[in-house]
Amino acid sequence: MGREHHPSPRGRILLVEDDPDTARFISRVLQKRGGYDVEHAPNPPAALPRLGAERWDLVITDIEMPDMTGIELLETLRRKAPALPVAVITAHVTVDNAVGALRGRADEFMQKPLHPDTLITAVSRLVERGRGGRESVLAVGAHPDDVEIGAAGALLAHRAAGHDVAILTMSRGARGGPDDARAGEARAAAAILGAELYLEDLEDTRISESDPTISAIRAVVEAVQPTTIYTHSIHDVHQDHRNTHRAVMVASRGVGSVFCYQSPSATVDFRPGRFITIDDHITTKLAAIGAFGSQVAVRRYLDPDLIEATARYWSRFGGGRHAEAFEVVRDQTAGPGLGWTAEETAEEEAAAETALLETTVRENASDESAARQILEAGHAIT
Image 1 (cartoon, rainbow, N blue to C red):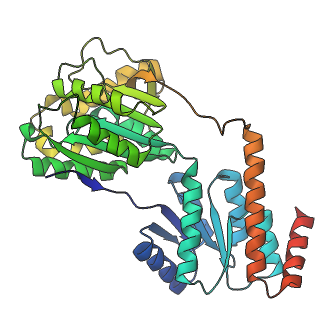
Image 2 (image 1 turned 45 degrees about the vertical axis):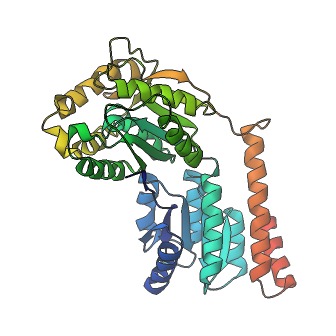
Image 3 (image 1 turned 120 degrees about the vertical axis):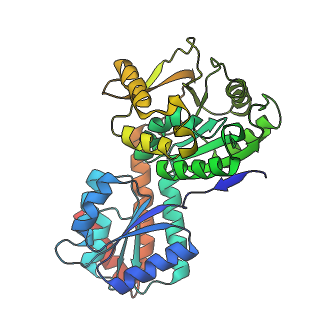
């Protein structure tokens, strides 16, 4: 049957726009032509609670709205989420609007009416920039439900931190039930976790530690470019789990951080050194495991009480009430950039954003004199 790949959207965008027609136009262009997941908020007060509770790759906001302007929303965002890209749109390029955008360090300043090609180009660049420094996480399991049992809470924590998450499942678990049913369950669980799913079709119970396993893992590693990998522990009685572990060790030699999760078949030699608190994610983890309906009724290790009890036990070492445990193969945490301090990186990014906005103002102003007036007013205020 071969590999299945179920990609996540290219990015999540929150559109803050009080005009329904403009909102429909922007949403349609970005969804149909760009492949983005676009959510609409009709005003800033409706947007603010979602900005704190959900992960976004870009915010697009109109400027002139009742109750709270887009510039005020931009200023609030810069305090709460300084790294989140923000594009402001307006029907009129005025001195006040442009100065407000400059003060708030908007990443893009666009004038209505918006041309679809211009919109797609700007959004693609901003989403790519927003994702540029984001951690990418890959979790590898031998069978459907392996990753969800061992690392679903950690993956949800990564998602909450704004990281990209992918799952690679090496087989469809045909020994445990119809492979088409289990594949469908794997897709449903990945959707619950917000993860991109790569589903291989190696033979259940006969997964090799060499090829084709290594090649399949290496191909996904090249596609995902993970900074962190989670996979099975070598301390496991199941041969598929051990062989998947060995293959991952070969295929992931260039990945900085590699951790091993606990499976129900792990032995007493499983000795974790990293513990991730999952109090905010235990309910969603149980929901993802519950997606494997063909197994829940026949596999005692999928009992929700047992899953939660295991997380309660590991919380002795990880804090909170629930935690997941991982053996550490290697753990290399990257800084803001080689040879750069965090302050220097922030200054460099701010300078680049200001230069980009100045270019945008010049492109939209009626002439160079008007552009100079807007820019000089903005710099005088800042």
